[in-house]
Image (tube, rainbow, N blue to C red; front, side, top):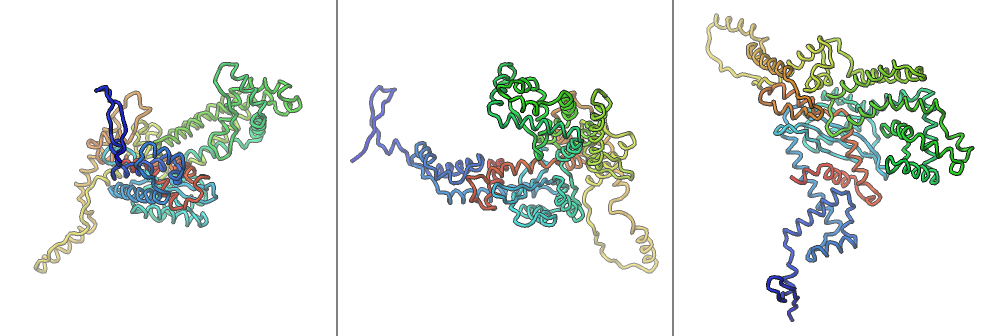
Length: 565
């Protein structure tokens, strides 16, 4: 018996018959593979649990969209993920393998999952020589079962490099937080491989702020502010009234009461700023005895001195918030540290000299911030006494927006000389270490003459002085041209790497050095973003994931561009 179905043909205005086999076309192998790949990308990209494919409603949806497709099971999807991981890993190995110079920068950080398992994440950053774009990849998110000692951290970092065939000699720097164990591990890596250790600038700024907030009067004012915020967060009636009265003002549609958290950057400033912005609305709720009992209101209400102190604190901390937000941006390198740090120091000095009714506390707070900034950023700010220039100073000088603006005249020359030597060395071609000379028969006087000439030639470098001078002259011309070149007025969104890539032909030697230093991240934010997604991966719906699968899923999620290539 042949089953048929009817459909209306609008062109012929007649009803025609068609077999069910023609209506439901059989799915091809290629279509099945495409759907398999897309389901894998949904799980990886949207951080869905692998057992999504076993959900009743998801299976009904897929069957409705493609009746001929048979959904794979959880184990099959896991194999698909493992295969995609191997493919993308091989792609990344080939990409990094093309990097020949010491120009790879790392970031690393550690975190603890909801299952109380420790993980360490390592990311790699380098410049694509073909288009000058900064490439950022998560290498590994490995579970750490051992104690988080300096030696174990160092071992995990080197293990991550080995996984992707990255020689330690290719690594220029590693950016981390200020944990003592991590600092000790990086010190060992510097001694063994010469890696520069960059302490996360955003984290360091928060430590400076914490130093200032320890002042007794300020600490007491913040305790009162937290107590007030906690009251609204715990009282549904008070919070509902606050929102209702805020809506009557017609300013913004909603109001929240954020509270500061010691591990959340700038949360103290956000709490203070929010209180000041809604000061009178908050006070009106506290003054209403039908909402807040008088006995409770007397303990909650902040005095005028406290409100004034919070206002001053917000004004002083506002640039610190802006600096932290900037440092956590998508592309911020060590070239921004000297300008930002000097800007924060200048801001604190201005606020210190303003005076006012709270001048004593303001001065103490500003002095504490200034001293803490100078202490914690001393390696960046100090001008070396010897002829030594650090990478922060080189990176700042190589940023087309900064150049030598933040250095005095004598140190500008010192930075230029240091970079000129480095660029000259980078531009010189490789020369064979040994030159084989065929032996020849010579007489005794000739032997003496040749021996004498040999003595004079022992100390000569492999490249002749005239050749070295030629390279140095070219580099000097490149530097002079760089310093003369003026930028357009709108330089806020200038990408220094793309700027240098456009001048790769005209300034090849200086370009090599520039992309080396302008690709170094100044914060550990890339690693933190990676374990933020990893935290969502190891969720309550994914408690059975092994450490290996957590690594593979987070690698694919953070490096989705590799899946699309």
